[in-house]
Length: 307
Image (spheres, rainbow, N blue to C red):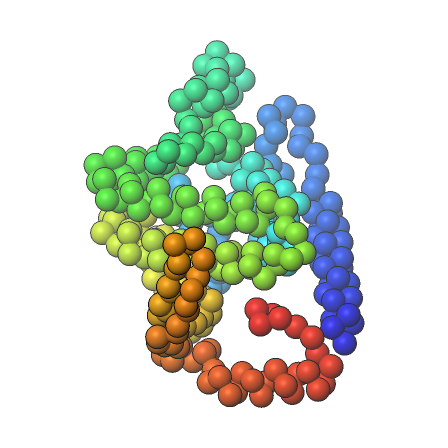
């Protein structure tokens, strides 16, 4: 039975991978000549109740292929590899209309070299490389709408003047880079599937918590991010997520006493106290866990405690 379950999971994995690859190939199209690698994806406003956080446009705009990204995220959550689509979504994001012609000034300003030498993101002791492709295109195309310029300047001014906001934004950025690494940059071995999924969920919760709590004092467009995070944290799905992660990290606490001999070997080991996290509804009573395992064993299912 367990073998059939693994075979079924493998088939779903292959089907999802093929679906994502086909969708990416169908959406991909060569950039027109002279576009400087610009994206063929058109900008659009969010539809209906579609939630979209935009920190660089006065009127929020969707800058990615939502269906393709959603498919890639589903596949990456199962396999740990989105096929590079997350990085491409940033590199190929379309740019708002601009009256500037990059050919008239870009080469003389050496924008690529400028980004390489001056735009590295240093947070703590780590250095993060941003998407040079996307940043070059942003610098080459100053927005035509003056409101976009004002919005970006307000965000920059607020972050520069408020160290606490800057620290919170750095924490969010690190969390997002960690999430992207888990989903699209680190190969996942078969034995770490469950642990990787827990790490992804932990990273998502960390970003939401930092955005809600750390950016609450913001007055610029950063309020869009904090408002979105606060709305998500008020939903039942977030409370369920918190319960799952609390169950993973704090199922029980054990207090033990260990006696060591002069040779460093354990002479005595006593369990003094065991306290289960009974406040978490996912932590079942020991006898219920025992019965569930016995029933599963009689039915022929073979899975680990984590599964």
